[in-house]
Length: 209
Image 1 (spheres, rainbow, N blue to C red):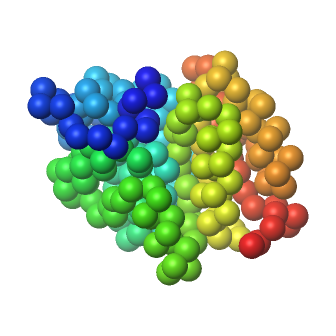
Image 2 (cartoon, rainbow, N blue to C red):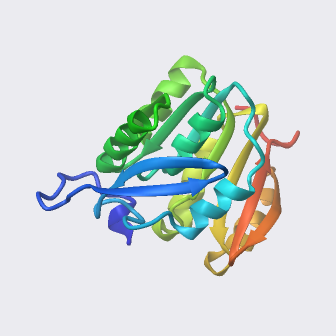
Protein backbone atom coordinates (compact mmCIF):
# COMPACT_ATOMS: atom_id res chain seq x y z
CA UNK A 1 0.00 0.00 0.00
CA UNK A 2 2.67 2.54 1.00
CA UNK A 3 4.45 2.27 -2.37
CA UNK A 4 1.49 4.10 -3.87
CA UNK A 5 1.97 6.98 -1.46
CA UNK A 6 5.71 7.54 -1.31
CA UNK A 7 7.12 6.17 -4.55
CA UNK A 8 9.11 8.59 -6.67
CA UNK A 9 11.00 6.07 -8.77
CA UNK A 10 10.75 5.21 -12.46
CA UNK A 11 7.45 3.94 -13.80
CA UNK A 12 7.38 0.25 -14.69
CA UNK A 13 7.14 -0.54 -18.40
CA UNK A 14 3.95 -2.52 -17.85
CA UNK A 15 2.26 0.37 -16.04
CA UNK A 16 -0.46 0.81 -18.62
CA UNK A 17 -3.14 3.46 -18.58
CA UNK A 18 -6.78 2.49 -18.21
CA UNK A 19 -9.83 4.65 -18.75
CA UNK A 20 -12.18 5.26 -15.86
CA UNK A 21 -15.39 7.26 -15.89
CA UNK A 22 -16.63 8.67 -12.60
CA UNK A 23 -19.91 10.43 -11.92
CA UNK A 24 -19.86 12.56 -8.78
CA UNK A 25 -21.71 15.68 -7.75
CA UNK A 26 -23.39 15.88 -11.11
CA UNK A 27 -20.05 15.82 -12.89
CA UNK A 28 -19.05 13.15 -15.38
CA UNK A 29 -15.26 12.93 -15.42
CA UNK A 30 -13.29 11.03 -18.04
CA UNK A 31 -10.13 9.86 -16.26
CA UNK A 32 -7.12 7.62 -16.79
CA UNK A 33 -5.58 5.52 -14.00
CA UNK A 34 -2.67 3.11 -13.60
CA UNK A 35 -1.48 0.44 -11.19
CA UNK A 36 1.33 2.63 -9.83
CA UNK A 37 -1.08 5.04 -8.13
CA UNK A 38 -3.48 4.44 -5.23
CA UNK A 39 -6.96 3.13 -6.09
CA UNK A 40 -6.14 2.13 -9.63
CA UNK A 41 -9.44 0.52 -10.58
CA UNK A 42 -12.12 2.79 -9.14
CA UNK A 43 -12.74 5.95 -7.18
CA UNK A 44 -12.00 4.86 -3.62
CA UNK A 45 -14.80 5.15 -1.07
CA UNK A 46 -13.03 7.71 1.11
CA UNK A 47 -12.35 10.15 -1.71
CA UNK A 48 -15.88 9.69 -3.01
CA UNK A 49 -17.31 10.41 0.44
CA UNK A 50 -15.26 13.60 0.68
CA UNK A 51 -16.28 14.84 -2.75
CA UNK A 52 -19.95 14.15 -2.03
CA UNK A 53 -20.11 15.54 1.51
CA UNK A 54 -17.82 18.59 1.51
CA UNK A 55 -19.69 21.86 0.91
CA UNK A 56 -19.50 23.64 -2.41
CA UNK A 57 -16.12 25.36 -2.81
CA UNK A 58 -15.97 29.13 -3.24
CA UNK A 59 -16.17 30.44 -6.79
CA UNK A 60 -12.65 31.84 -6.58
CA UNK A 61 -9.57 31.45 -4.42
CA UNK A 62 -6.49 29.26 -4.14
CA UNK A 63 -7.28 25.60 -3.50
CA UNK A 64 -5.09 22.61 -2.65
CA UNK A 65 -5.57 18.91 -3.35
CA UNK A 66 -3.12 17.44 -0.82
CA UNK A 67 -2.01 13.99 -1.99
CA UNK A 68 -3.74 14.17 -5.34
CA UNK A 69 -3.25 10.61 -6.64
CA UNK A 70 -4.66 10.47 -10.16
CA UNK A 71 -6.58 13.69 -9.60
CA UNK A 72 -10.28 13.10 -8.81
CA UNK A 73 -10.35 15.82 -6.15
CA UNK A 74 -8.35 18.35 -8.16
CA UNK A 75 -10.47 17.82 -11.26
CA UNK A 76 -13.68 18.09 -9.23
CA UNK A 77 -12.53 21.36 -7.67
CA UNK A 78 -11.52 22.66 -11.10
CA UNK A 79 -14.93 21.80 -12.54
CA UNK A 80 -16.91 23.24 -9.62
CA UNK A 81 -14.83 26.43 -9.43
CA UNK A 82 -13.28 27.08 -12.85
CA UNK A 83 -12.06 30.54 -11.79
CA UNK A 84 -10.11 29.18 -8.81
CA UNK A 85 -6.37 28.53 -8.72
CA UNK A 86 -6.16 24.77 -8.05
CA UNK A 87 -2.92 23.17 -6.87
CA UNK A 88 -2.48 19.38 -6.91
CA UNK A 89 0.51 17.95 -5.07
CA UNK A 90 1.89 14.49 -4.40
CA UNK A 91 5.19 12.74 -3.75
CA UNK A 92 4.58 10.31 -6.59
CA UNK A 93 5.60 11.60 -10.03
CA UNK A 94 3.30 9.13 -11.76
CA UNK A 95 0.38 10.52 -9.76
CA UNK A 96 1.23 14.03 -10.90
CA UNK A 97 1.50 12.88 -14.51
CA UNK A 98 -1.93 11.26 -14.31
CA UNK A 99 -3.47 14.29 -12.63
CA UNK A 100 -2.10 16.56 -15.38
CA UNK A 101 -3.47 14.21 -18.04
CA UNK A 102 -6.86 14.05 -16.35
CA UNK A 103 -7.07 17.82 -15.94
CA UNK A 104 -6.40 18.22 -19.66
CA UNK A 105 -8.93 15.51 -20.58
CA UNK A 106 -11.60 17.25 -18.54
CA UNK A 107 -10.64 20.78 -19.57
CA UNK A 108 -9.79 22.10 -16.14
CA UNK A 109 -6.81 24.16 -15.05
CA UNK A 110 -4.71 22.45 -12.36
CA UNK A 111 -1.14 23.18 -11.24
CA UNK A 112 0.68 19.95 -10.42
CA UNK A 113 3.88 19.77 -8.40
CA UNK A 114 5.92 17.54 -6.16
CA UNK A 115 4.97 18.27 -2.57
CA UNK A 116 8.33 19.60 -1.36
CA UNK A 117 8.74 21.91 -4.35
CA UNK A 118 5.17 23.17 -3.99
CA UNK A 119 5.70 23.95 -0.31
CA UNK A 120 8.92 25.83 -1.06
CA UNK A 121 7.18 27.85 -3.77
CA UNK A 122 4.20 28.62 -1.55
CA UNK A 123 6.49 29.87 1.21
CA UNK A 124 8.67 31.88 -1.17
CA UNK A 125 5.69 33.50 -2.90
CA UNK A 126 3.57 34.00 0.23
CA UNK A 127 0.82 31.72 -1.08
CA UNK A 128 -2.01 30.89 1.30
CA UNK A 129 -4.80 28.43 0.61
CA UNK A 130 -8.48 29.26 0.94
CA UNK A 131 -9.43 25.60 0.73
CA UNK A 132 -7.72 22.25 1.19
CA UNK A 133 -9.37 18.95 0.29
CA UNK A 134 -7.49 15.78 1.12
CA UNK A 135 -7.76 12.04 1.54
CA UNK A 136 -4.49 11.96 3.50
CA UNK A 137 -2.15 8.95 3.39
CA UNK A 138 -2.94 7.57 6.83
CA UNK A 139 -0.80 4.47 6.32
CA UNK A 140 2.45 6.45 6.17
CA UNK A 141 2.34 6.46 9.97
CA UNK A 142 1.21 8.87 12.65
CA UNK A 143 4.42 10.89 12.87
CA UNK A 144 4.75 11.47 9.13
CA UNK A 145 1.05 12.24 8.81
CA UNK A 146 1.14 14.78 11.63
CA UNK A 147 4.21 16.45 10.14
CA UNK A 148 2.50 16.68 6.75
CA UNK A 149 -0.72 18.15 8.14
CA UNK A 150 1.12 20.59 10.40
CA UNK A 151 3.09 21.91 7.44
CA UNK A 152 0.23 22.34 4.99
CA UNK A 153 -2.45 23.49 7.42
CA UNK A 154 -0.13 26.32 8.41
CA UNK A 155 -0.73 27.70 4.90
CA UNK A 156 -4.47 28.11 5.35
CA UNK A 157 -5.79 31.65 5.15
CA UNK A 158 -7.43 33.08 8.26
CA UNK A 159 -10.87 32.17 6.88
CA UNK A 160 -9.73 29.06 5.05
CA UNK A 161 -10.99 25.52 5.60
CA UNK A 162 -9.49 22.08 5.20
CA UNK A 163 -11.77 19.13 4.53
CA UNK A 164 -10.23 15.73 5.26
CA UNK A 165 -11.58 12.20 4.97
CA UNK A 166 -10.26 9.50 7.29
CA UNK A 167 -11.56 6.00 7.96
CA UNK A 168 -13.03 5.62 11.43
CA UNK A 169 -11.06 2.42 12.04
CA UNK A 170 -7.79 4.09 10.98
CA UNK A 171 -7.87 6.73 13.68
CA UNK A 172 -10.19 9.47 12.47
CA UNK A 173 -11.39 10.35 15.96
CA UNK A 174 -7.88 10.41 17.44
CA UNK A 175 -6.77 12.64 14.56
CA UNK A 176 -9.57 15.09 15.35
CA UNK A 177 -8.46 15.11 18.97
CA UNK A 178 -4.84 15.70 18.02
CA UNK A 179 -5.74 18.56 15.66
CA UNK A 180 -7.69 20.29 18.41
CA UNK A 181 -4.78 19.80 20.79
CA UNK A 182 -2.59 21.64 18.29
CA UNK A 183 -4.92 24.63 18.47
CA UNK A 184 -7.01 24.00 15.38
CA UNK A 185 -10.79 23.97 15.32
CA UNK A 186 -11.37 20.43 14.02
CA UNK A 187 -14.82 18.90 13.94
CA UNK A 188 -16.46 15.79 12.52
CA UNK A 189 -18.83 17.17 9.91
CA UNK A 190 -20.21 13.91 8.51
CA UNK A 191 -19.94 10.14 8.83
CA UNK A 192 -20.37 8.06 5.68
CA UNK A 193 -19.71 4.36 5.07
CA UNK A 194 -17.15 4.07 7.87
CA UNK A 195 -15.43 7.36 7.08
CA UNK A 196 -15.27 10.63 8.99
CA UNK A 197 -15.42 13.87 7.01
CA UNK A 198 -13.43 16.35 9.10
CA UNK A 199 -13.52 20.14 8.81
CA UNK A 200 -10.46 22.00 10.06
CA UNK A 201 -10.42 25.75 10.56
CA UNK A 202 -7.87 28.15 11.95
CA UNK A 203 -8.51 29.00 15.59
CA UNK A 204 -7.36 32.20 17.27
CA UNK A 205 -4.82 30.27 19.32
CA UNK A 206 -3.04 28.81 16.29
CA UNK A 207 0.41 30.34 15.83
CA UNK A 208 0.47 32.45 12.69
CA UNK A 209 4.18 31.89 12.20
